[in-house]
Length: 145
Image (cartoon, rainbow, N blue to C red; front, side):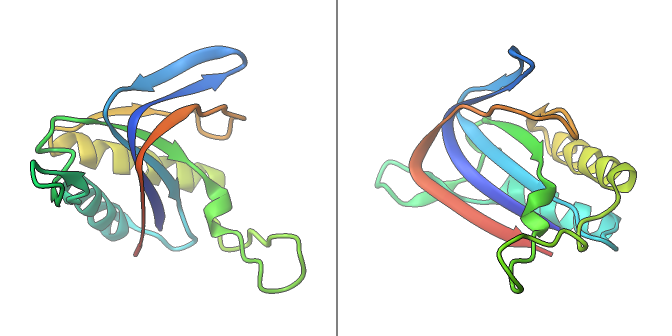
């Protein structure tokens, strides 16, 4: 499982010209589910995201988590994070989990984050999404399990 986490001032998701989700200050999380991922990876990633201290304190040091700031998370499923580009120029996605399993684990990550008390907004699994966002920093962290 891979998560690309970006600190944002705001972000939204648009599908078919309709805004379906929006957050203010918080995290935009792009999540890729790999073949063989289980609830162990779900719990690990969710705990790490919820507690990741990437928001600055008064001295400018990264000391606060999304929980500390009562921020929000925009959770977006993105199988392309599993693209293998080692051979040729076209990514190979054979390491990505099947859509039905991936969607269930994606939703489980959201559920686990909500258990920590984070407000989670979701993308639309399998849809073509436009994702306007205002990066804050920019700060981008990659986590894998």
